[in-house]
Amino acid sequence: RGPCLLVRRVDDSCEYSLQFIYQTRDKNGTVSLHDIEKGAESLVQFKTFSRTFCCAAPCSDDQNLVVSPSDDSTTAVVRDWREPQSLVASLINGTRSEHGILTSLAMAKTDSLAMIACGMESGSLFLHDLRMLGKASPFFLSLSNEPVLSMDMKPSKVSMSPANTSIVSSSVLVAGL
Image (cartoon, rainbow, N blue to C red):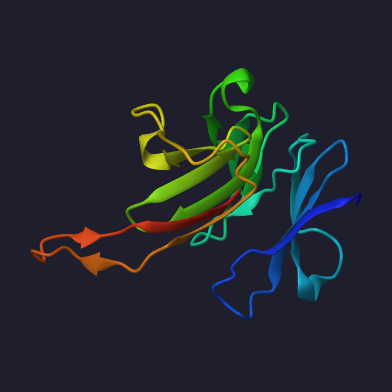
């Protein structure tokens, strides 16, 4: 389908996962979902029109969600594989002159947390909570003057708070420059 930018298992927490996503780097920047047992044809696909090296990222704990770059290279888009043409969310990360283009994406979800990390060309990192879109600004962190080229995010173990009154849920994010 064109030059390959990404091949990644959808649910890497399960060693027997048979689904993977594939992203092209052609003019359409097509992201497609495949099942190894069903052959080469995609189960579903959508076009990002992104021409950068920023790769789509499956949600680590919800195999129906995927985050990808958009055609303007500064916006991340969340989609649900069950209806890939409909946007779940669109995340604006600032202007090109301020932070450059998206260079990496990661996504993790738990019962009480839905986080998306957007690495930028400027070395900045934006963390979005999907539950707070439109209500609060994303968390911003400047990591370096170099682009954030790769990231991965996984939910951490859920544990009780010290007073055993609430469940604490968080994610672990690893970023490479």
